[in-house]
Structures are given as structure tokens and as C-alpha cells.
Image (cartoon, rainbow, N blue to C red; front, side, top):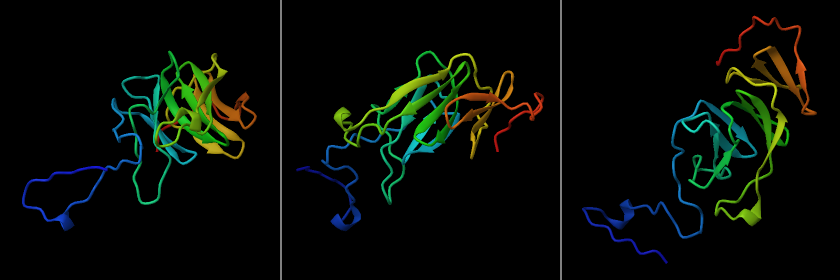
Length: 174
């Protein structure tokens, strides 16, 4: 049981218990800011902040509650600078300055129990990177701007140049 002592001019009807003893991880805001956000498998993912290779993921979405993060809920794409994120089928696509990665899995539950699930970071390419957080998920896959021009990461996780898009085209966030 939790014991709460409150001082001040409040009645019990004005108080609301925010935290409980359910074993869930405490709620902490992701620190360091972010430059890219995506929703994948009922979680909010943020990246591209002060720690460029760190992604924060929320607890799984629950009706009536905003996104909840905890300090232990991070995935690192070691040595990479995260530029953009996109949800594609069973993978969270992580587009970095110098590579493309996929994150697979469901992750741990709200208590942080590692036995309940995990995430696996898998490299797709370490020779093609992403220049802009502006990406598009289309029926064929994810379109992004690479240094060599527009690229498609298809649903088979292969990279294809998009020659019909001029190399001078520039993706811009909307």
C-alpha cells in the first residue's frame, strides 16, 4: 500500500493519485530534445536529440493516457546520428546520417521486464545514409533523401535508387 500525506487546504475529493504501486516504470520525459518522431506498434518513438544515436520509446499506448516514457526505455544505434524514423510493417526504420537500420520486436512491458520482450537493431545498409527528417511511407516502402538522390527502402528491406526523381529534388518537412 501507498501512504500519502498531504498538507494544505485540500479536501480528499480534490486529490488524485497519479502514481500507483502496479510495478510500472516511473514516467520520465525524454531528455535532450528530438528532431524526429514516429508511431510504431502502439509506441511513440523519438530520436535525433542531444545524444544523436539514442532513441527513446514510450510504454505501449493505453486509452485515456498520453505517451509515457521512462529512463530505461532507450535503444542505441551505436555510433550513428539518427536523422529520421518511419514505421514499415514489422520494423521501425531508423534512417541515420551514415546508414539505414531496422528495429524489430515488441519491447518490454510497462514494468520494464526484459523477459516480456526486447528490441533488436539490425543494419540494412552502412553505405547509404539519410540527409533529411522528411520521409514518406508509400505502398512500396519508405522514400528518403540520400546524398546520391532520392532512395526507396522497399518492403523487402532492399534499397533502390529512384531515378525518376531528379537528384536536385529536396525533401522538406511538412
